[in-house]
Image 1 (spheres, rainbow, N blue to C red):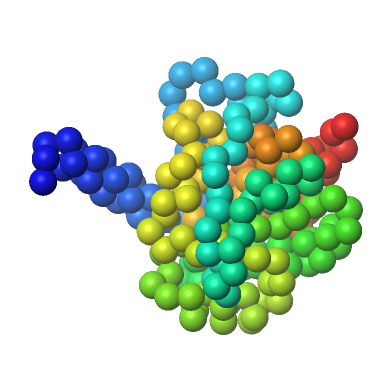
Image 2: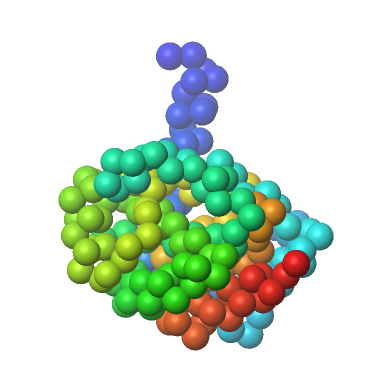
Length: 196
């Protein structure tokens, strides 16, 4: 193995370790140093003004039910990304709210997509969705590689659960780093949905 290959491997291991340490926690961490262009509101939701948003990374792959999904196919809709794991207590507490709001907004230009992470197989993830009435698709990301595609200093998912709102142009508009109820979730969605 070359020195460069070892360096890349060590960087990837360090990034996954960082995600592991931050898993299933309460919010409070910002998106990195420098000029991030985002503001944290009193409700713990980070937002970015429309002209300063970063483009969402490639979020594509297999879903927990074995289908292929590419979030870019939803361009033109507001997309709610929820990073979750079946093993995560706060994820269980918010799941009913996500299921409810996703059904209320499915015909209003909003698409929900989950990113299931750190489940060793899809079996517990499928059982989780069935138990909580989650009907929208979830990408299967057992190693957290999709989370690592978000650039440092942007509204990236740093904890599990994390919720991101992607605007109609494919740019990340808002983020929460804690479990949400329906009221807080709608406070994230409605302003982005109202944008023209």
